[in-house]
Structures are given as structure tokens and as C-alpha cells.
Image (cartoon, rainbow, N blue to C red; front, top):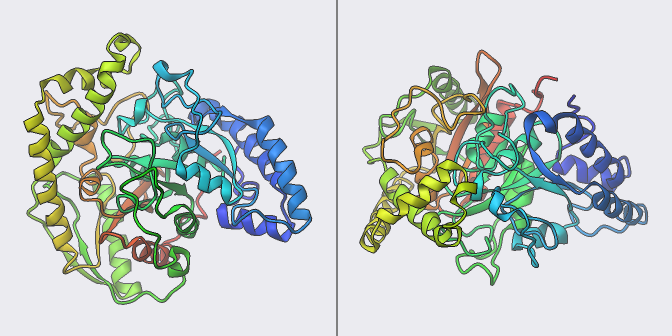
Length: 471
């Protein structure tokens, strides 16, 4: 069902196309074949633009034969999370209320992908307007991890993580407002880095712009590093976008690792962690100390869980922004998203401003840790994948009034959206049932290169690429 050989990763695909051992046309055909074999079960893709992708691939194949290359991604197909605006292509944002929407402009990340020579193969699944950390969707079908299709892929970049893990595409784009590239990467066994806030420009404007990040989901660390080099940098459409990186992320992956001081937190906020998750993460941290020479301090931080801050910003931003436009179409919405819109009415402006003030204080706490440490390591999520049709695992204490129930089982991801730090999830081990387990690496602000350099070193001593989902 899956063939890792027929759909290589980003760098391998680009290298083979440049050497002439693989054509963009053959690669697109292999991707489409893989999608058709598994998508009806896993629910990774919505629209697949097979004819247009093949037409574009034929042109790019001819150019490659003539020694002409548009950029480092010449002829490499990508899946695009259906939240990103793609000119002339339907962008439902996972909502029945937006299925007819077709943008007339590309988002900056899409323009940069195209400029590097990439092919847009299709749009990947997302929860409604990216509101949830689960993989449930009435538009695409509920996302399922390729390692066991009865179980959830996580979300909200569910389709992108599934597509990469199942070898449907070399890589895919996702977005992350509270963990949305890291959660599905943990459940699907892929690599994802949420960069510093503004590192990759986002557009159009979001009411949760202080939380919103864009970035790739890949099989390997180096694939991600290449894409960060290509997709980062300022854009006038995003007033938060950062200056261009001063250090190549890809080059950093091949530089000798300095002696790093790591803060290892087996948990945060006294949250219970599944024993298999805890064991895999701790074992990998031990390897970082023994084989990479890292200095590791095991810490129990006295931070207070910022979930109320996150919930206030998430609910007021999304609920009020969408609520007025969708007030007559509530019956078409995911029930959870409809509850979020309803809940937004109980907030006052003073609540929002208080949350912004507390966010600043929490972010300062996080940044102070990086005065002492180079990296912070935690589990990505404290649970293993749960049934695909569920919004979350059983046995979790879900607050009765919460409009963001998924935050109860993702307590390690959203804090670093609040602080804006780069945070990566990489596979660090496997459960007894063969499910991937994710380890989260958080770095100081603006140091994506440092996070990627460490993750590449960790990947080399704890490889996962040889593992592919069962057929």
C-alpha cells in the first residue's frame, strides 16, 4: 500500500530530479497512486488536482531535461492544508459554510513554494477553521493515523501529517495556533517545527494572530530545515513577519553540535503522562546526554498552566471573528465550533485585555528559562492516539465549561504558541502497539537553526525514517 521508495522525501526528490534519475511526472504519478491507495481510509486529502499537477509536471520535466531549474524544489509535489489561500483553487477551511470559496490571491507561503519550483498536488484536511487539536471533520472525514486507521491522526493539520506519514507526498504545509503541526506529527510519526511567531509569514489576518504560525510537515529534519530556509523572511502582508534568518537552517544541521544545556521536563503543570510516552521520551533524553554530550537537568517548573489565557484568546478571537458572519448557519458547523462561538458571548473586552497582559507575563517566564538553558524538552502530547471518531481520549478531566476541550489533552503545545518560541515535534519511539511517540524540543526565540541542528543530531542517533506504516 505504501512505498517509501516511490515517493522520496523533499531533498531526495529534488536531488533525483536534478540528477535525472526521477522526473517530476513520474513523481506526481507515484504520489497520486499512493493517494488513491490509502486516502479513502485515512482521509488526508480533499481535492487532488491530478490533471493540473500532471500538466505542470510535464513542463517541469522538460525543463529539467534541458538543465533548467526554477528553484530548489523544482518538480516536488506538496500537499497544502486547506486553510491556506491558494489562488483559483477552492479553500474550504474545513467548513461546510465555505466549500464554494475560491481565493483570488496566494498566501505568501504558497507564493514562495511555487517560486521554488514546487507543484501543488492537492488540499489536505483540517478541522473546521483549524479550531481543534483532534482530527475530526465533517468535510473531509475524520483523520486517521496510518499506523492504525482506527485511531486519530490528531489535528488540526491532520491531512498534512497523514499525507507525509503515509508517503502520499514528499512534504505538506500546515499551520499551528495551539499545536496543530506538532500534535498530528506526534500521532503520525512525522517531523514538524512551529517556528518563532512571524518566522514564516501568515496571511490573511487572523483574530488569533498572536498565536498563529505556518510551517511544513516533513519526514526528516533536513527536509524541514530546507523549507524553513526557503519559506522564512518578511512579507508586507504580515506585519508580524520577522527579518530573514541570519543562519541557514539546512547548513546548521550539518555543523558540529556544541555542548548544549537542556532543561528536561517529563511533564508540565503536574499533568499525568502515559507511561509509554514518558519512557520513550526519557530514554531519548538519556541518549542526548550520553551520545551527544548534552548537559541535561531534569526540572519540575513552577509555571502555572496558561490554559485560561489560551482559551480566552482562542475563543474570543475565533468566536467573535466568525460568529457574526455565521450566526445564521450554526446548524452547518461542527458542534464543538458552534459551542465555541456561543461561548464567546460571555467574554468582555476586559477579559481579553487581561488575558493579553497575562500572556506577556507567561511568555516572559518562558524566555527567562532560556537565559539558563539552550533547549527545553517535553513530551509533545501526554497521550497516545485515541479512537479516530472521538474528540479526545477517555479518562481526561475535561473542564465542564471549557469551549476548548482539546486543550485538556494538549497541555504541552499551546504554551509555546503563547510565548512564540520555536517548538518541534519529532518521533522518539514506539508504543507496544507500534504507534509513534513524539518528543517536543523548544528553543529560545528566533533560534530555529539551533532547534533544527539539535533535532538533526538526535535523528542521527535515534533514526525513524526506516519505519513506515503497515500496509
